[in-house]
Amino acid sequence: MTANFHTHSTFCDGANTPEEIILEAIRKGFHAIGFSGHGYTAFDLRYCMKDTEGYIAEVTRLKEKYRNDIQVYLGVEEDAFSPVDHSRFDYIISSSHYLRSGDTYYPIDSTPEYFERCIELFGGDVVRMAEEYYGFFSDYIRRVKPDIVGHFDLITKFDQLGKSRLLSNSGYNATAERYITWAAESGSIFEVNTGVVARGLRKRPYPNENLLYALKRVGARLILSSDSHDISTLDFAFEETRKYLKDIGFKSLMTMRDGHFVSEDI
Image (tube, rainbow, N blue to C red; front, top):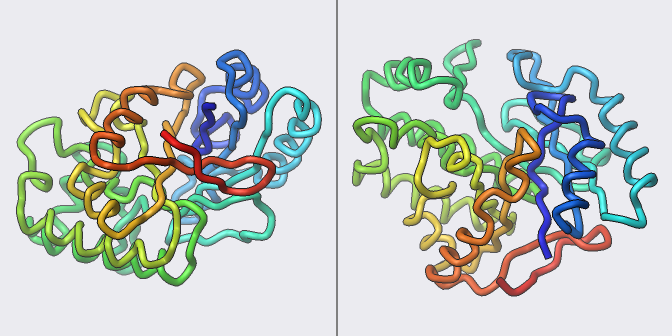
């Protein structure tokens, strides 16, 4: 059965209302749909939810309305720099969208040009930048132990658009593998996120293949998501990605049923 738990609606930067998303998920035969609006970030209001109370109320209403048709879950995508009250949600996706320098937060996934500014903060040293990014994020994961770790290597979002700065760099790859192995000791589930492929920015989902092999070596659990911002991508490339993961050696993926994370064979 199919489900997606990384889903954005009009409450943040998504194109569709929660009800439109639920109806499309039902049409596609999903057994569950989880909403993960961007948690409030006071330092950057462009993408986050401004009406968290309205979001909670609406998803809760729709849970009841469609309870005989699909399981609906109330989640949130929490940024590592702006924690939320976990007790109010069915599950937490923890992601890291920023690098911080002093009191300034630099989004790493905004535009290729803005990402270049992030690299400039470190004098062009991408390995040092990766140490800063993964060090903070991995420490956060180990302390907070979120249900799901979102797009662990988001820092590579634009790396396949032109000349590779990260994925072709052995120092970067060693750093990323070291930190994902360390972060996996949290026991959190790591998402395999096809959204970056849907946007035409990478050929393979997050995390990169070498990081998936690292997760396989330490027995980490995975969940498949599309980071959907539009109903057309609710299950983008899921079948191809399941085969890809099976070829790497994974035999199961996590999903949610009756309020609990459970393992299902690929």
